[in-house]
Length: 438
Image 1: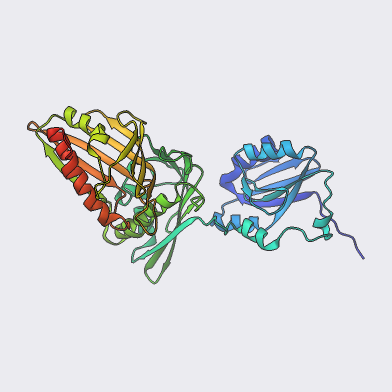
Image 2: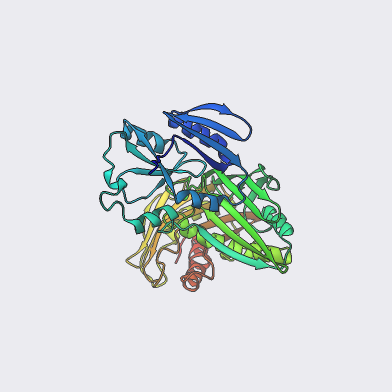
């Protein structure tokens, strides 16, 4: 019977846009070398093996990546520990959570690899022994176990080419500050959501009437411990049309339930896609108006005086709705100051001063919270903002207060509306007017 073995020459089709990262990883990280290159191919030598990367325009990169994860190749090293560190520290790969002692990872271009020692005994992979748990392996490579990217869909009677244009008209449906351009492939733009936050995007892919992909190249999310959580994630808009109805399938690739910002972003995207963008598709107007709680009060005082009193939090936020005294600790006057408010066992909230513009604006960001009187999500305040805006006219100062994120969908909404009406319109008003919250 004829004998067959695996040869040392392989080729793989990869997305054209991954070419730079493929070269960085296979040459700079793994130590390979390009022996020949042309517009469509790179010939790479790695030890005694040769690989040809064929660069193509992949219509659905997400499906391509899933196919690549279903099979992996093997590389060997005489120093596994050092190579393991080098691969992971490159920032170019995605580590796969495989129930096996070796490193499995997905390299630029989509191919998956297993790293093993050159002299490692791999007999059980050759049929001697049980090997890894197959069910767990499938979960790991498919990314289905606690790794599902945020996804939602909408449908509307709109031409898909027109839908693409409306998606690209970002300020029409997404309530953010926008600069740059987002209409063509490789366009770059920036989004800001207040304070020092920013999100830099590149239009990585644009197929008219079918698909738009925005890559987050850098970001600053000062509300979270990892302020780069969106970096290298993708916003993917896939369109399909049937009998005059266009369906948009939106995916935030990389926004999974295990990341810190997931719950806040899930709430945000659900509104911006299923309500605002849907309305923009149908009527040409997005639902950008914020439904967060607001209150406005006016004083015969200067902005300087009002600003000073707002910062003296412990003097006006003195108790809860039931009269239980507030415990205050921390500082609340300068940028990045942090303070905690407690009402016994019923309320805990930790705040950070995200923005301070003297005599004009103060923004608190709730970094942590626990509302024990809520049945479901006791952390509903986490990720929300308290915004105090000051304007003056005719010798009077108006205070416009917003609890951004406190919306009717929240379980605590009705109770918190009553609470804020009391805190802002009575206690803070009294404190600023006559120096006594009571």
